[in-house]
Length: 557
Ligand code: ATP
Ligand code: MG
Image 1 (tube, protein in one colour):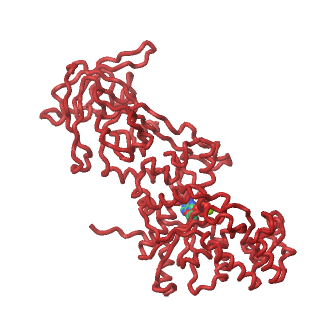
Image 2: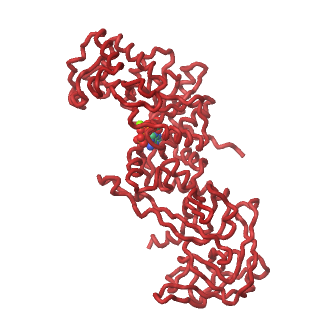
Image 3: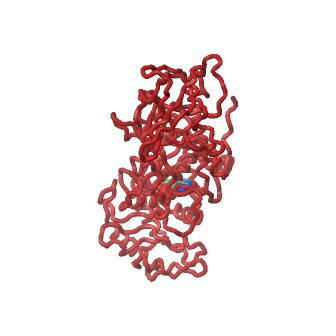
């Protein structure tokens, strides 16, 4: 088969140009993925990871992982480890070793001193509020700080004193000396170092001044020899500052910043800050709650790395912000699992059916294929017996139009078994259904000659004799797919009824599977065995439903 050409995008076009112009030695390509270890990665980061590592692979270059750990108050090792695990799980390999912006604190400090010596940075005594208030705006120039024209010697001395811990948090900052009237507000003497008496998860108490992202990032790129520094669109206006900072680092090759649009997916929140709030407020069970759009949540939900990578490939790289419909991600996981996983029968919300003409002590072992799309997956034996379970929603006492499932007086086929006719509904005192009585047509056993009499519905079922109890988690979206930006706080929009747990009945074959195994529950969707399973009780998460034509029909009405 011909290999599918990976869609070429505008970032590749830029890299191709650099290659044509021999901008980097040996036309090397080195990208990086630079997460801040202040939370767990989410679906948006998947896009960034696939893009950066994808380019590294495509151009036979490499990709660094660099933790942007310049804010010690919010960062920790738990996040570092989870991020590395997520990248590995997605199937990418970074160039060793793992890098940290904090590795470069000494160099960054030297670079800042160099800027001061060039007259390109100064220590400002204004408070952060004063600095903000004198920045001006789009239509007004900023106001120069009274400390802007300190001598180089004084600046060097003060900066060193900042480093030595002589001042309190916020008492002084180091600012780049660019232009307070620059049309781009970003260029109005941005702060590049601040005082923060906080213990850093790697450097401990060695430092009490920390570089800001805008300064640390370009220099870290330069130190590592990154060629293409790919980031999201909100950094576009900061690109001049990125390039400005590079002059503090006198390397012959300069990294290039290229921006692309963030990935947004309907129903999914892609902000670590908001996700943390959800975890802390307890609306979800943790970062890896299967409803969460975090990579660990998506993984636990049962998505495969292949499906996520394929998703990112299909949506491509955009230059303007947009939102991808969650249905598209769901399509990708269905496509991936369709031929890959076995199918078994599980009744999620059971009602009991008694087959009144089937002998009490008789059982039969029926042979059912594991995946009709792939014969090589073989078949299994499924026990059939007098007492079985079917799905509650597969029965209607007074059927509506076009309901072709079980209903009094009508026939349906039990998958892989017989055609049965529903004779009677037995009720409890409160009028709820106790059990349904049916009779079997013994001439219709699947696979036997002449059995192929046409009936409209085929139902999945489980023998009550051999059924395995399983808790089944069915999920709804945390945020409604047709949510509009109405200014409401996101916490108010969260669907607190997005998890329903059913006490289901699975066929015995489920006992052959382990935590992390996936399958299709026939007619119900794709599921994975969750880590909450115990010896006594299996727990399954619904990964995604099948396309439900019945529900669609209902919605149309
Ligand atoms: P958040 O707002 O969730 O904290 P962030 O951009 O601050 O996101 P970082 O850890 O700094 O998170 O991001 C690491 C990399 O991932 C950056 O290069 C960033 O541009 C990229 N990234 C983050 N969110 C998205 C997204 N939604 N789509 C594409 N790339 C993203
Ligand atoms: Mg960030």
